[in-house]
Length: 242
Image (cartoon, rainbow, N blue to C red):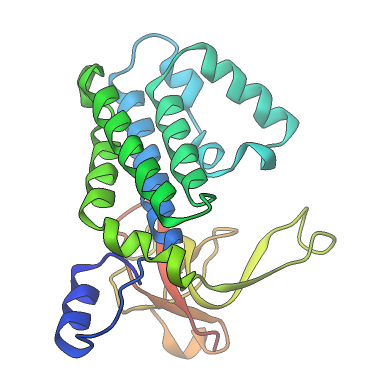
């Protein structure tokens, strides 16, 4: 399950003998969001050339290296040459993700602990507290380590079911069929609150809050589980196509 206080409270009160398994995709999603927070902050406080290097690079940091295009690989190499904290945070995310390749619980435990110490150590020598968001992820891992390590015993995940059609969807776009997945959303039409339905918007590739339920019939994507007050961003959605 997700590391939501509400979920944990519900389990404690209603499923007291249940073994909690924290979803690995939720852990990595938190790290992805932390990397973007580092990027945003570094753009604001960085010196000459930082804005040019990081501008419009949000989705670059969400990809694994093997999925980068040749153009993206070239840009990534240029960014690395500048020794930016965003690139360091990205490496932290990749290492965290790689821990899930560990063969057993003891190995994973040791690697998580080393990763948390590394993040804390790096943050101590970082100007402007740029790695603060990564430190929060490290603290989250330490606070929920037992449930995170349960993944090696049970191998469970609550990720959404997806399909991929490389020939039909412009080089391999993921299409969610069910479950909980993160969706690009545009709150410029209306702020999005948890529990509200989302539908397609006039912004290509982005969802929006349903404001006219009659017109939205047949085009409802699902129900928002997280909010977005303004601008564009990622919203966790329970996919219920209707």
